[in-house]
Length: 63
Image (cartoon, rainbow, N blue to C red; front, side):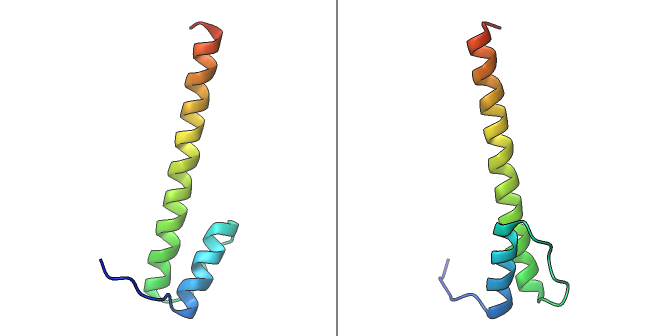
């Protein structure tokens, strides 16, 4: 995969995704892809952390 610099709206979409801000529909389709990819990755990381925390709690509780 080739590296490239993000466009202005892709950068704004990335910043918004990391800050938890809503997507601006005026941004391009490429920016929407960036936003969706980042928000999906953040959600997966949060879910993984929650599951790991629950497993750890169950192990400590002797379940």
